[in-house]
Length: 330
Image (cartoon, rainbow, N blue to C red; front, top):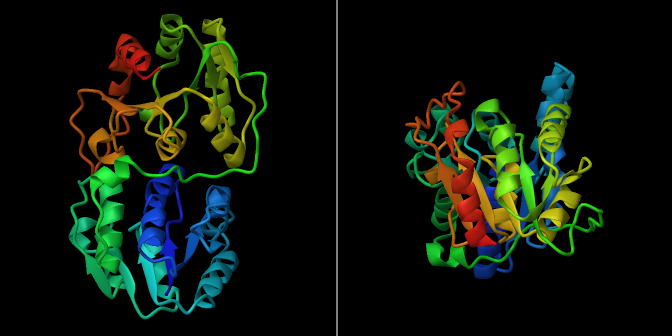
């Protein structure tokens, strides 16, 4: 059986969807799995042994250049794929639904309209599955695959999952300490409402006897990293890392602390201890908590269909609370 999974972006969302791969292969080793993804996330997938082929779809590039020519080229490339026995849209957005529809396949599966934020996407599927949009995202991904193949596994198996991110790179930097616990701090995120204040990160570094490594992905996040360093004496700022190098670094540290953003979810995927901080986004939905993967939520009332990007309640999370959980995990 040959299937295509459509999950184009973003980093954390792709990570949270990749959990299904090990269960697909566990129940049917003969399944061939291709994965469609935006080019900037290819490295996240290409070394996964459960994926046969990573197919790059550059919709963002076409949008950035405002080029209909590039867009039509990408859509034509999709039409030339396959044929597949099954296409699964694990993203559930209009753009991913259209891509899924264009891939030659006998069955195109996605969530039913009441289970989607962009409900119109469901018209592009010829088979749908109903599962509440407010449910935990990891459980949603797994339940969709269970429905597609009539497999069955429990949440207990997810708690005992195998790590599923791979890298050929080794991060041999001077940032790693051989004498202290190593903790990654993540000051950046897709929006400021997901970012924990730099002043409180600096407070946190004074509460724990550890070596702190700050990671960043763009120039603004780099500035935040150096602002924390200016306030703290035991902080190292990493160089800009590829996805492969980031995977390697997370594998070498003892704890990852950050907001609702990709690298924090990567720690969960690698079974590394983590603390994910939530303000205007729903922690109960966006994280799968375990004994070593914890969350701290602000007191905000979250509307998952209308995230309030002006809600800066993450700043009210006490650094002492983070330190207390950190000491338990360390």
